[in-house]
Length: 563
Image (cartoon, rainbow, N blue to C red; front, side, top):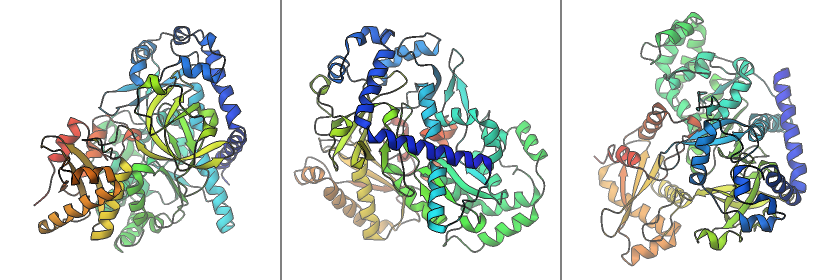
């Protein structure tokens, strides 16, 4: 086995071993971690203002420290980016993770060396170790190792004091740049890009050129689906370029980078002919293992709002095993999968100190519920909770806005699955419709009609009285206009079933019946491309389940295709 990959397997196994040990005694471990964070940071500006020296117990902490959001720290973070020290934390801040936020306002999330190390331990190494064990158990052989198709785009900037700024994965990849250039199909000018370019074409081109690709890694399954769908639509021109050893003249790329890339290219008619032969067989059957015969696995987040893409991905990948990576955010590495194909995540006790608000009280005033959070050993299986974290990078009792469902326990640490984002919830008249309800509606619609829906979004329309939901769907093929009314009735009834509160308000005339629109083909792929061009990191590019910004509203209403 390749020594580099064996190291990744060994590191992944060690991380799983440490996780299991910490889960065994998670309650005590978690409390000790909190007290360590408090003690270490009592002389910071935040620690002095909040009297960390007087905090001796978990109960003290809950009484003295209020809940927080990013806005609670925005001014302090701005000072930190200019080089001021000892403000929120004494832990060295080595990076600022960028995120657009729910309303498009840029955020700089501090990332300490401790958080970055956790990301390194609980990302690709875990997936490699899991697949290694899976293949040995299922097939009795060693895992094959070759090149990796990495969809992520590694771009980094800087804040005022010179600290790096960008995606956390980009920071991690830069730390192992030499290794990445050996195992990833894309060359340095693409993997560590310093300018915007046609990444979808370039990553597809270099991936198809490479015969020995054994894994695909992406932030989310949307990225894997988009790339494979792009190949389906553009295989002929891609094969022509591989045969001739050139970058397409249509590819948007600087002259300098084009020259660098083409200097290393040579015609490959043999590979091009092989690809043409396979693609001409069509796409009714999965094609990934036909063109990359040694493909072993795919690693990407695919739960929650990504599930519709995860399901559709199977059309291209068939039975290739998937690991669904981790449950994480810019603020913390929360949890990780410990089984292949599982979407249940084991909470990582060393990732931070976690508290959980039962959803039935989560919307009450902060001062009334700040001492009512549950600890990780007090959760009920099957119940939903809002997760609150005191992280390792200077955020305390931070309301990240995620709702999780507890599905079991690993030792004393809960096993969770993502349920929904609080800010991705519609509530025109108090009906509280979340992402899970909408996905249930889409599933019901597809099952009843036989229509294949590629993607969807919902908009709360308050311009009419009473208000109504507007559902956008992108079907895989145009639908007859005369069926639209029938489709609307099906979706509205499905929503009444998925959310009884919605159904009651429809019946009482408090809400108007749902409207439905079908957008043009490739609308959602176009939206993602536009957001990438606007500078959004691929690691932050999530499905548009809810249309909740003026830009999204303008974009999707402008592409309605009801004719």
